[in-house]
Structure formats: C-alpha cells, structure tokens
Image (cartoon, rainbow, N blue to C red):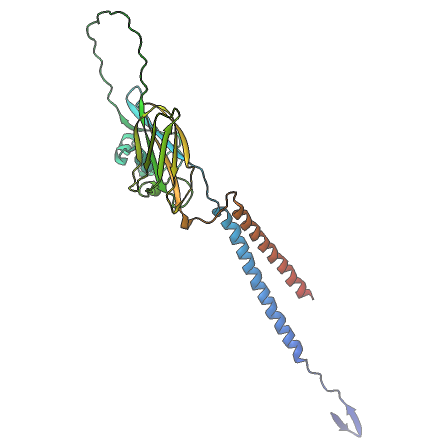
Length: 294
C-alpha cells in the first residue's frame, strides 16, 4: 500500500495474518488434553474399583457353627452359654426353646436380646428335682460283682443352610427359613459300630440321629448340585450321654459366587491388574504434564 503526502512516498508493510494452521493445532491440542484427562479419570476409577472388589472375591471358609444342648445342673437348671454374634432369635431356633419363654426366663427386652454378651448364661428351663424320702433300711445281702454300666446315648443333628451372603456365619435370616435339601449326610463314630446316613431337609429343620452312643464322631456333608460350600464339609464332635450335638453346614448358590481358584490366584490377579491400571493412569498424567510444558 502506498500513501503520497507532500511529495513524499511512505511505504507501509502489510500486517501478517495469524496462520489458520496454528489455530487448528491449538484446537486439536486442547481436545487431546481433554480426552487424556477423561481417560485418566476412568482408569483411576477402574483401578480403585478392582482393588475394592478384591477382598469380596475370596469366600471365607470358617466359622463352623457347633453347639451342645446342655444337660441340667445339680439344681435342675439348664443354661446356655452365648457365643459370638448370637441373638435370642438364633438361640431359640438352635435350642428349640420358644423366644417368649427365653425372654421371660431371663428377663430380657428386645434390645437386650439383640446385644447379648459372649459367655453370658441364659436359662433355658428347669428340670424338677426328685424328692427322696427315707425308708426302711435294706436287708444286707452278699456282695455281688459290680456290673459295668452301659454307655449312655445322645443325639446328633445336622443342618445345612443357604449362606446367601457367603460369609459362613449362621445369621438369623439365613438359618430360620433357608434350609437346603438334598445334602448327603454321613455320621460315624470312632469305633465304627455306629454309622448313619441321611439327607438334609429344606423345611428349616435339622436332620437328627438319635440313640447315638457317647463317643467321638465324624460328621460330613456332600453339598447338593448348584451350590458351593462356604464352611468345612467335615466336622468332629465328642458326644456325651444325654447331650444333643448340632452342627451347621453352609453353602451358597453357584450363580452368586465369583470364580476363585484353589489358592486365591484370581484375587491376586485382580489386585495386580488394578495396581497396573492405577500406575498406567499416573504415567498418563505425567505424560500429559510433559505435553503441556512443550
């Protein structure tokens, strides 16, 4: 462009326009950074989610439930010793004592029934003590050989319940109405002269074997098809005369159990994958930071 002023010629240099390519590059750079931020957030959420889910992938195999129905003490009272996580409802179910009677005998309200102390003694009932009256002195007789008293007998009961949450704990809502039918039960004593088999019931009741001589017994349960065990499948009890020994076994539906290898390799693998995803997210964050500096 040329301007003429007072016989003088002045040249002006035209203004350079900002290349359109720079705007395009900057726009693409902003879009890439936004995409990288979004990807970083998603990777971090996925990694933390896998780490949080890892403990839930392992199914505990413990907390086998076992108890005795105790015999009466010398004064005729029958007491039950409270165990961990037990309530009046679960004790009433296990012992067969009506919950109203249990609360009345021990003067318990609803709140006290929910928060029982471990080791607390609960009165289940009282056996009348026979009154012995004196009579005429017996006529002395010749001494006879002392006979060997026969062993007493007891009862063994087995209950298989649906462990809905898979924690192997006999919770009230699980043991009262979620009995699993079809579990094959085997009971045998140490001497081998008492062996019984049976099938678990699905009506909320345990299967019991009466007139079992006092001895050490091995109890085993084969879980029915479609379920996986969440407790030990074999248990040993020492049965005493007059006692009722009850063992609870638990299983969970296969469709609700995540696949876990025998040694927990799946859980370890998920933990490693989660850690790698988090590390990848951190590396991506550093990469984005370097791109910004450039």
